[in-house]
Image (cartoon, rainbow, N blue to C red; front, side, top):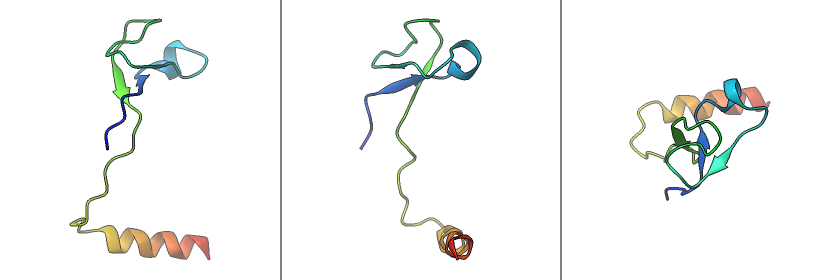
Length: 60
């Protein structure tokens, strides 16, 4: 599911805090915005098993 909420791509350099919007450009600095949603899960991820094992070891 793709999120409609976007964040200013250069907010760390130009703003004190994140600027969220629905537009394709930032309303404060007119820079490009990017999607705030995380990357989708891919069941065919070749390295997913290793990543989950490493995450499990870090938790312990």
